[in-house]
Image (cartoon, rainbow, N blue to C red; front, side, top):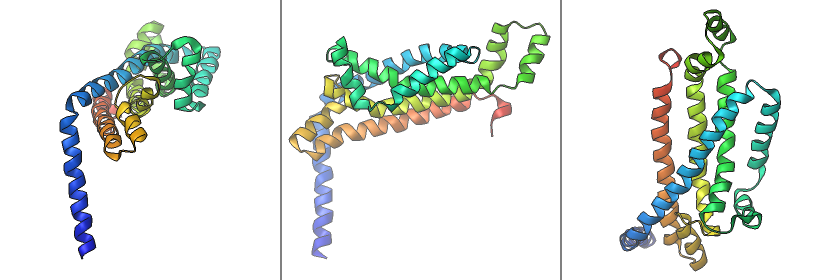
Length: 227
């Protein structure tokens, strides 16, 4: 009984201590959170601008398909910390630049693969009928392929964003800032609460982003495809 009381008291004391740390570090936490969101938004935004057009082209050109998806697959096999660190000797220096490039390379595959799968999965009969009605290739892409493939593409974007939110904590190891700075400092000082100060907001941000993008995915899904 005494042991259980001591455990509960210690657990309560730990929560109070952690909340006090949040209050004491609120300015730094807000700055780190903003930096972390930038570490996610910039690479994922650039990945969307590159991966979706390349994915569309890949459905029409086998050489582009082989090269683009092969390259993206190779990038995914490289450990995330190693990929970020590799940017330094490649001339990126330290700071956010190597983190942006590495995270961009990591974000490409889910978006590229889902774009390719979504466009390829559109019924060939629909496309043939549209061309029979006089539509150009661009009109078929705009009015048929992209709308029908949008849910699959959004699923890829959703996956990529959540992955990058978690991976972005490693940017702190090359001076990229973000929530990973608390985790790195906590590991160095052997302070669990500092580690949690970076890990908990990162996890909450991933959950919130996944929820929001999930609703967007439902919104872009044509009525006839909704379950």
